[in-house]
Amino acid sequence: MDVVGQAADGVEAIELTRRLEPELVLMDVGMSPCNGLEATRVIKTELPDVKVIIVTVSEDDQDLFEAVKSGAEGYLLKGMSEEELSSTLEKISAGEPALSPGLAARILDEFARMAREGTGKSAGPEG
Image: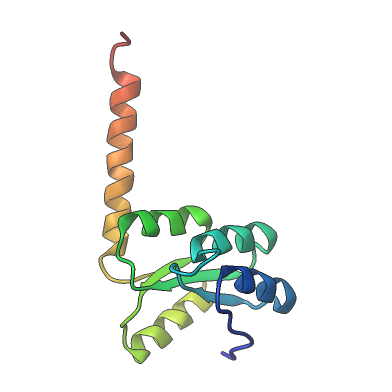
């Protein structure tokens, strides 16, 4: 893989992605004035074939769920080894989603919780 650009914030990431049309964007969450989740939504709307992987220190469930809803193909926690990152990028290139260990379970738990809540609301008596 070749690095073709580097952005300081989400706005610049959007502009560079529009101009360079890379295959893959590694995006941080914590940027301003436009954060990585907002930038991901714009990029995935305008350039849906560009793969966006969130690489962050944030283990916050809300950031994780928003990244998935925004169209990110992966969510990786910073601090992974160079070998882990390389292996993960190869998997992404092959079309596999990328999640740091433990994050997939959190996503599945959230979907299960939503299903229980949705079932409870629609199955219960109205009143």
